[in-house]
Image 1 (cartoon, rainbow, N blue to C red):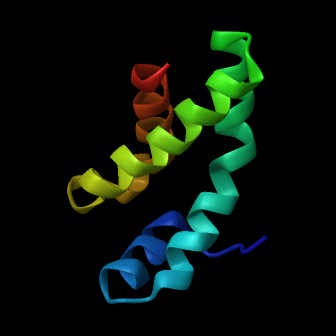
Image 2 (image 1 turned 90 degrees about the vertical axis):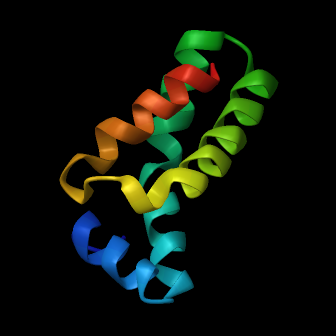
Length: 81
């Protein structure tokens, strides 16, 4: 996995580099899924919530403080659960 910072990846994404978003999603996918499984206790509901988390995150990504991306993603996931 990339050791590039979230802030750098977000900047790259904002400048049109779609691969930066792929790296960010890969970076947080497993941790978010485990978090959602713990909350929902249902694999399929956790998968749905994870997908919706990334959809919602993408809608709001322009306003995110890059230094708080991880916590923000978990907040979005919490609300989706």
